[in-house]
Image (cartoon, rainbow, N blue to C red; front, side, top):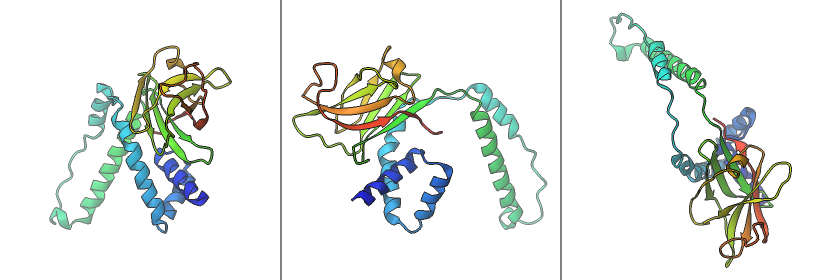
Length: 229
């Protein structure tokens, strides 16, 4: 069971993009001989894909597209006598142009300032992921989705934010373990959405903690990190 949990955690980290380049390359090599790893990566992708659908897209500035159009203005070359589908040079040229366009787009896009997006995977004591939380810092919004979060009745899961360096936990509300959970946060809680702060889920009585602090067992924790781009 421990080996399966490790494999599932590896698949989740691969999809989230938290692995180093060497670690990602190692995972991709293993995919050739480990179909179970490929299935787990596909399952993680299906679980996490809806997270990006609920956040507002960030449109580049008009100047970015204008510079990109100018950079892609290439004069056509005289057509050789052979049909285009018979010329290997055509395919090489097309591939080169496509590569140049991709590089140009990437170079311009990185100059567009985009607010940081944060993500945290909340694991239980054995390292099994139970919740995935994504936060849009600029909008003060937070989205939590269950991965595998069984909740014994009659308790309910409550999400907490623990500031780095100490401080009292701050409740982010009771979660629905059967679907997505969106929160719009205001100051001073909004100001605590930063990399390095810890999120935790505790099991509380129906309606949540009545004391403003966790009263039941903490079943999963995870640290907010900047989402890789």
